[in-house]
Image (cartoon, rainbow, N blue to C red; front, side, top):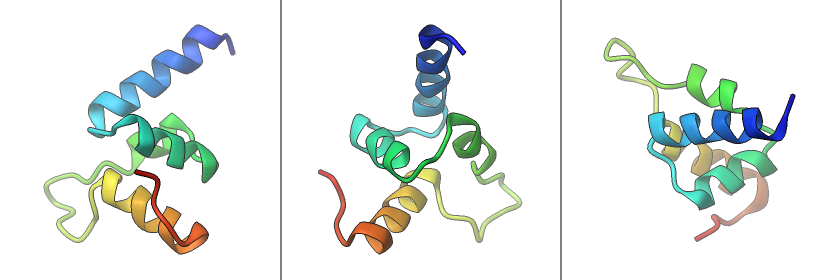
Length: 69
C-alpha cells in the first residue's frame, strides 16, 4: 500500500471519528488500523458503545497507565 493511501485512510478516520493527532498516535501505538476505528463508530442503536475517541483513550490508559496530551 502506498504512503498516500495510508495517510488518506488515517485522515478519513480522523475526520469521521473526530480525533486529534494525539488520539491518532495513541491508536497507532495500540496497533489499530483506520479500518478498525471506522468499524467501531457507534450507530444510534448502539447507545452502550463509547465514542471512538473515548474508547482509544480508555484502552491506552489501561495498557500504558497514562494518556498522551
